[in-house]
Image (cartoon, rainbow, N blue to C red; front, side, top):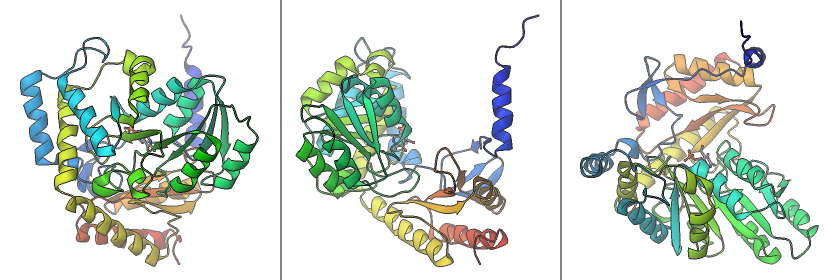
Length: 394
Ligand SMILES: Cc1ncc(COP(=O)(O)O)c(C=O)c1O
């Protein structure tokens, strides 16, 4: 009889379980809403990236239905063969206008936008200078490119400068940062990094996945928030979080976008968005432009909840965005806090190493525009009660 060649995986899983690192998937029953039902329990949902509530916005639903009726459910091909539809082109034109760049290209996800772009524009002769907390998709793109990877400590612009000083002036170098860091909710130091990129002649790239729809005028992102338009060569955004649907995009010069059409492997070798997804994203851009009060509401909720957590005495790190971590230290404590909150009616995911540094485990909270003050107060009361029971609070 053949022995199972994958038995080593079970051993790895056992080891993970012993370290408290095994995660069960929570199953959502119904829509991704501010209060939602996961695993048969109704909870205040502080774990979704649906910042603006657009996953269930009537205008987006209607456009998706309309696109399905007119064009069917799939695009049927990769973009460079037969999978480019007018709705894809229109979305890219609108994204470029929104981001104030010459052009834009849409990918299947923010992940493939990052990994496909970095690996396309760099070769093994190039260097990437990257913040240590940049997203996994950037790290994978760097690895795929086979460029030399130089990591600088989180947000440490002087350390990045010291790295750049060691490189020959002719060295092609990409300087790359997240706009909003996904686990800590703090912002990349864009103005200083842009100045560094200009001084050393680097390509400047920003991953604005958590800033799209959240920061800047009408949610144009951190480039708009910091007023550094024209100084970031490669802007990545996602359509999967605040925009409410699925996808990622790169905005930049016409030459960059045309090059990605020819060299970015996810664009070349993976089927394009169903037309309903592209149509939904177009509707989302209209909502950002026509209903900016939703973004204002997101920020009111963010201030209310963040202030509440800090007043209770939790360590919320250096967050500047709707992502607020509650840092507790050990992974086991973070997972217990998350489980106990869930029992108390609040879903806030526990996160430990290797996603965050050892000793910096946390539950991560994200408020949305659609939470009511009552829901957020309910969540704060649960945090206070469970935090005291677990002696995280005095
Ligand atoms: C900083 C950052 N970049 C990129 C991505 C990937 O985006 P998407 O979910 O659209 O693939 C994420 C998603 O978790 C993220 O947090």
